[in-house]
Image 1 (tube, rainbow, N blue to C red):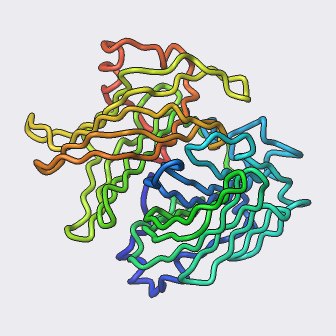
Image 2 (cartoon, rainbow, N blue to C red; image 1 turned 90 degrees about the horizontal axis):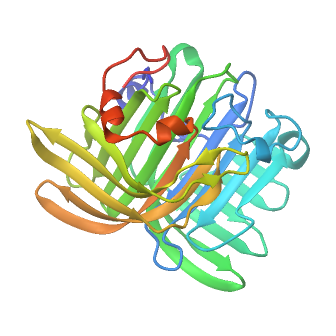
Length: 353
């Protein structure tokens, strides 16, 4: 998407960190608000933890969860708190107007889900009989990315963070301490935008080394962007956004979402980036099969990986968001047809690689 504002421009505009990293409520034209805390590398039995709220249902296929709508699409708020553990109540749905109190830096969803900011600390709480958590998040690094969409229709930021707190699962308590990502976005309630495939994956290799992998496709299966972002305290950040390959080599049997959509979820997949016919980055992943529905129109889960980058080998676990709203004839394409997809096509005017 066209980036009109980045970290350097924030400094030029004299925006300090606390002003930039605000949790805004729905207000005025900005009726869609998204927030996410993601911890991608927790010890067993969790493997990962997310705390994701979406206020309003955008007119975008990958974001629209009809089964969660309680009153109207714009009045629907959802909160997803999930891990690798088996749960049934990880997704909660609310009426934003009747059941939520939404203020700047403070969100409350009935007496179940709470988000509050006392900068530089962010607090997340779920109070539920099956799965509860109380988390404190601290932002100690610079803003990783702060961008605005063209014509002021939305903005977005994310930052690396440190989290500590307590998780209660079926009355058993666990103390956790981990690194992760904190994100916030807001947007105008736009007309229909045909984004039909999205995956977003995070690997916390160690305390100082984090990788974000993401791909977005439109209704014709054209790639809007496919990128690998590498953040490290020891070196400059690295972005690969050309000639990035994401390929699903094996899938699970077809599933049907609560919205009635058929979807294939990845069992094994790879990410690869090459320069001058030499592989620079290659990640091979195997899903744990712990997918849970509730991330907008799709699923979240975790995976094992083997990574080659910079002539070094790594292995561990990662976090995956996966939404595939393409018709099945796109999902079931053979390799030859997938190669044809790499041919450049016109892209929607709001976005670019």
